[in-house]
Image: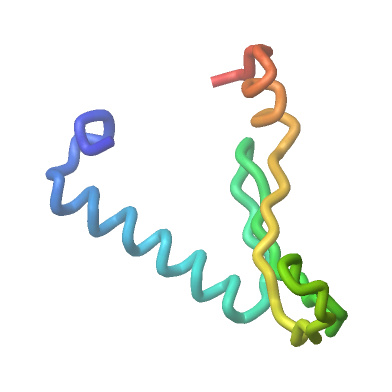
Length: 87
C-alpha cells in the first residue's frame, strides 16, 4: 500500500493503525461503520438463550452479549462473484 500512496512504510502503517483504531472506537460505542463500496460493520445485541453441550447434551445458559456483524456492499458482492465494479 505504501508504494501506491507514496508514503513511507512507517507513515503508511501509522495511517492504517489510526483508521483501524477509529473504526474500533466507533464500534465499541455501538455505532455502525460504513465503508463505501466495501460494506458495513455493525454491533448487534444477542439476548440470553439456552445452549446445549454437544458431548453431554446438558443445557447451558448463554449470557447476553454483543456481536460484530459485517454486511458486504452490492459492489463487493458483485466483485466476489466475478462481476466487474467501477474502480
